[in-house]
Picture: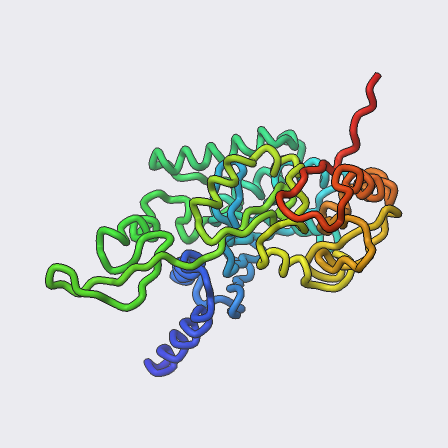
Length: 355
């Protein structure tokens, strides 16, 4: 390959990331490219490598999703392996973490987190559960994730039998992590949460003009369903910490009542019915889907909106009757469909009958 061809390849790669909105996933992709080479697929939304490092597929997405379990962090990297998971284990694994992604049709399991290492820990947990070497409990899963984090902080490197870790992602001394920590000290880049807008002169030197990044931070619940959007990272973290137990039990307020216009717009995306695309659907007292969240018709009662995952969970427990009951509970607690203001929390779970 001549120099001109090599430069063209580099230029194309840079163009692929030019439209990405989140800096850290871009930096992480470039970190992976040093080991795996250019992605097999590169778009404005994701970079994909196939059959690398013990994984069937590595997908690095242009997203930065705040995830609160077992501790606040950001998710953007997905890893997949071939594994047949018995269907009766799916619910138990889903309770352990919303980061475990099971596809029974493909006999494929994925993990989503903030590093290849965390995904290797998650997938190794699933392998152990399926093989009968571990119990499918949240405590067991979180102890493994926190254990890996503790190893990293102590300068120790996590490993398992099947993950090759060719990029040395688990190594605390990996230059990539050192460079990210030294960005501020070097003065060549901006610190986390800020971005460079040209340069300015300070004390006779040209330095980056760092301004607060106008990012959006999405808080999700245990089903990985969006709950609230924030423009400020610290506000998102504080919201997560204050509402962790509600988010973990999925008893937070109904999202159709969110005052955030951007989030309401997200609800409206996709076709009618969660299976047909993104967005939330609203349901009637018969447990039937009647449209997208936010599209309430005149004369309609207070909307009850559910995501695909939430609706499927209720449907598995009691079919349309379970969804219908949730709608009735919502309307009994919040009768005025035109009411504005703070949302009224109504659990999707049926109340226990008093003995």
